[in-house]
Image (tube, rainbow, N blue to C red; front, side, top):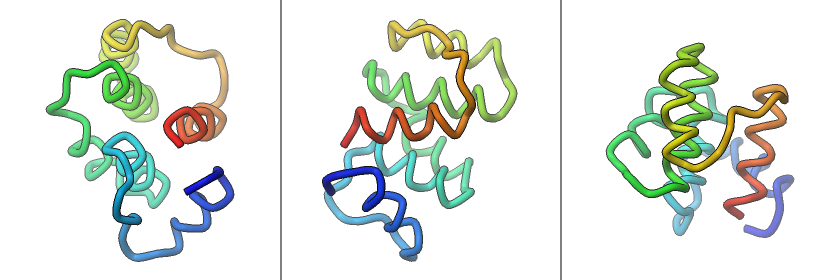
Length: 95
């Protein structure tokens, strides 16, 4: 997958494309409106990239304390942008 427009178009599919990283798979499920499945993809992982997606998901959930915890694990700070902008930014990073 080369860019965000192709990734967004894939949200019309029933399942994510094979070969997506776990981070992109989580963002794909979130883009489909399945927060729980997105969270399940990264909840058990410790790496910085997964922690960054995990942080975004908790921010989206409204659990800011937990989001900030995961942002710190990812060595990031909570962005002052919309959730939609952060989602797109994360997709670009992981593509």
